[in-house]
Length: 288
Image 1 (cartoon, rainbow, N blue to C red):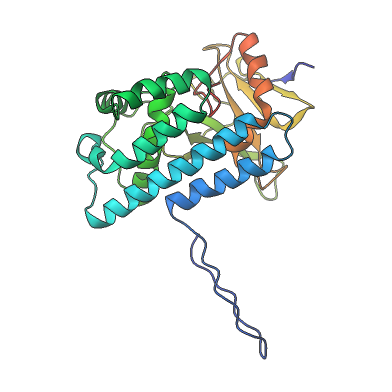
Image 2 (image 1 turned 90 degrees about the vertical axis):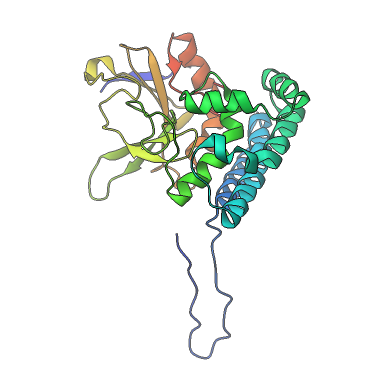
């Protein structure tokens, strides 16, 4: 059935009670690598009950490879601080890039796997990565985004702004394009806050509920949204002016959801949007 349309951490510990044995302090992993591990675990959980687990299992493997790359970048920064200029920092990514290329070549979707094999045959695609990074690249180069995401996330954790162009509607920290949106309930109201999530550094920033994620359009009559009973937490938020859309995930229905991961459960909704002539602002992990 087609979707229906409508307009419009820090450290912590558990103190022992009197007379009770002391408990081990709980120290959450707040490293960038730990963040990738949490996404991988969510993808594996969703895959265990999915009728189409392949995209989720691929995502889990990619997250783990990106987590290893991020750990290497973090360790390198502790030894020698980074600059935020990719041309200067790229050498410290080398081992992680090779690992990511091998994973993409062996396990990625056919088009991505072939691209990764070509790159791996010639070593890390330095010129391509620098060109994509300095040119403010978006979804036209899925592989470059996947390779550079660990680096971008480490820069975000360090609050070290990268030397990249910034454009309206893009991530205010790194200039990346938004690939998913989240809707969070606002306490004591019937409303929700909408935020966009960067497909490169994972940063979030707010966007008015009646505003296109890709252009300046603010007319509610030109900003339809679409939902389907099959995926009640998912909404296609489209724009009739630029014919772009962003998919949003309602975190009020499931606080465990990680939008970029849970996105992969509802790829049929993206395929429906494409059939209607809409293009996603930035492709998700499945390339759509």
